[in-house]
Length: 199
Image (cartoon, rainbow, N blue to C red; front, top):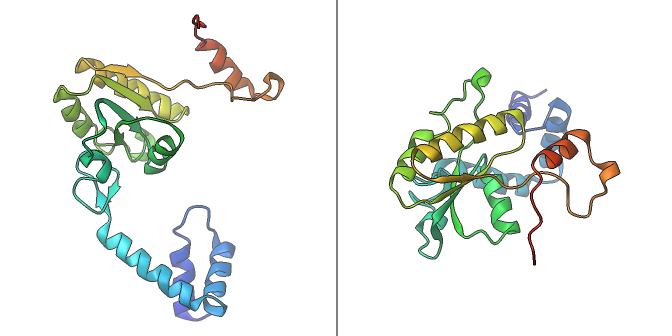
C-alpha cells in the first residue's frame, strides 16, 4: 500500500466509530470517485481547525472570542444551562424555547480518565455565578453515572453562590408504553415523580 494512502486511512481513523475497514472504504471512495469533494473536505477541515476556538464566556465552539449566543442582548441573563457538549447545547436550542445562556463543560467529571473540575472549566463557571446575575443554573448533564456525579458537583457550586440549581426531568418518553420502558428508566421516573397541579 502507498505510504500516502496509509497516512490517509490512519488520519480518517481519528473520527469516532471509524475503524480500519471504514477508514479504508472512505479513503478509496475519495480517491476513486470523490476527489473534488475530498479537496473541499480537506480545505474546510483545515480552516475549521485553524479558526474555531472556544467562547470565553460559555466554552462553546466559536470563531470569535465571544460567541453570538453570549453576545446576544435578547437572552435571559438570569438563567444559565450547563451541558456536557456543544451537541447537547444545540439539541436544547433546537428543541425547546429556552432563551437563557449556556455553559458548555466539554465533558463530564471522570477521575479515571483524568477529567476533573479544572478540565471542565468549573473555575470559569464559579466566576460567572459569582457575578451575581444568574439566579438559576439548569444542570442538563446526561443521566449516566458520571453525568449524575457532575450534576451533583455543579449543584454544590451553584448553592455556594446563592444560585438555585435545577435539573431537567428524566423518565418516561412522551408517547411511550410502560411495558416497553427499561427498568432503570422506569425506576428513575417513579423515584422523581411530581405532583399533578390543578389546571
